[in-house]
Image 1 (cartoon, rainbow, N blue to C red):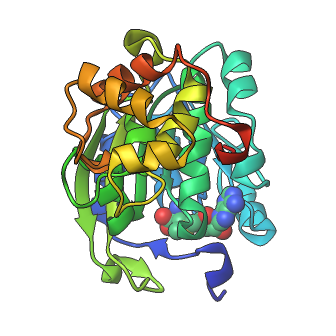
Image 2: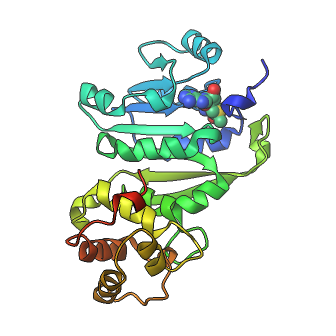
Length: 274
Ligand code: SAM
C-alpha cells in the first residue's frame, strides 16, 4: 500500500533505531505507553512486548484497522483519531498514572503536537519523540545559540530535553527529504519553582521574541510596555539594553517578567493572543 505523504507517512525500517527508541523509554513493563502515529507498527511491535499496555493513536483508518488485526487488544488498544483530539489528561486520570509517550511524529503537525504535550505536562511522565532534525535542534537549543527561540523556551519550561540520535532519510520508507532526530523530554513543569503563571508568561515570551532582529527592549516597547518601565526592569534583571531575547535563559526571562508583572499590562490592542 502506498504511503500517504499527506499524513506524514515515512515508515521507519531501521531495526537498531527501533530498539534504541524503545530502550530510551526505560523500564515500561508496568506502564501505559501512548504511541503517536504507530503507522505499520514498527515501534508498536517492540512496545507491545515491553509495556504493560499500549494506546496506539493512528489517524489513518486503513492503518488503524491493520493494527487492530495485528496486535492482541489486551496489549495494544488502537485509537483511530487525530492525536490533537486525544485526551491525555483524562487517560492519565483513568489509568491512575502519568503517561509515557513515544512517537515517530507526523512532521506536518510537529509543533501542534509538542504544544499539546506541553499543555498536558502534568499528565505525562516522559516522551521519546522523533522529529525533523532542524526542529529537534530548536527544541534542545541553549540560550545564545543560533537555534534558541520561543519553541526552545516553551518546551524546556515543561521539563528537560536531551537529544539522543539522528537518522538519515534512508532509515525510512519512503525516505523523507530531511534528517530526523530522536530526543527525550521529561515532564517537570518549572512554573511553580520560577514563581510565574503560565498564561501571562507565555504572552510575555511571545512579545519578547516577536521580531528576531529587534532588541528585547524594542520588542517589549512595541508590545506596549512604557520605555521607562522596560529600562527599569532590564536594569533590575541586570540585562544590557542591547540584548536580544535569544540570549536570555529561562531563569532570566522569569526574573524580567517578575519585574514587569506588578505594573499595568500593555494595551490590549498590542497584546498578541496565545
Ligand atoms: N510509527 C511509524 C513508524 O515509525 O514507522 C509511523 C510513523 S509516520 C512518520 C507518522 C504516522 O502518524 C503515520 O502512520 C500517520 O498515518 C500518522 N498520523 C498522521 N497524522 C496523524 C494525526 N493527526 N493523529 C494521529 N496519527 C497521525
